[in-house]
Image (cartoon, rainbow, N blue to C red; front, side, top):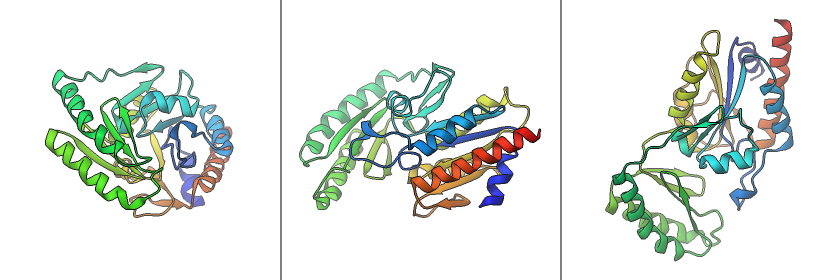
Length: 260
């Protein structure tokens, strides 16, 4: 892994795109309590301070939630809601939901709310273009398959929703956009500022991160955090191990920039 890390660290223009939960922050029962682990936060700050180097967060969280837990400043690059929401240089892209899309969201909420309320400790998260059915807190895991089945039936009855199954969450969205679309958008937006092609490092732990790994090119690098099948070329064991990896990347990037 060291050779791949050193290779990308020497790229003329480098974007480090990071999933948040389970990648640079441990998974916790209350998502509002998630925070960057100190070692990852320090490495990110070092990378952001370097020339021709960008760090972005790409998450399934709504943009407001992502900005809050990352402590993002106005210059931070943020992709929320699996690529639907984009914040670049403090400017937020307009979602532009149609009346028909808003109507489908209202209809699905009316169906999902009582279904989720019927399972102790499950909860429904409202997202800008959909809903997340959270089950991390559910003590009786035997109830989860039935909850998911009922939620899928409700979404199918309304129609027009994209489904995403993640770690302890089942999501429904009226927009079929992925983290891969978010990475593409970031690469394109940075193209004018960069001096050439932007090399991308993407790291994530969840099945939804596979969409981002899928759009990486030959010179890019995907890093899978934790177990599971993956398209990523490299893997680390867990959040602390990735924080250590990110620190080594900051070391190597600083050395490369100094050499220039």
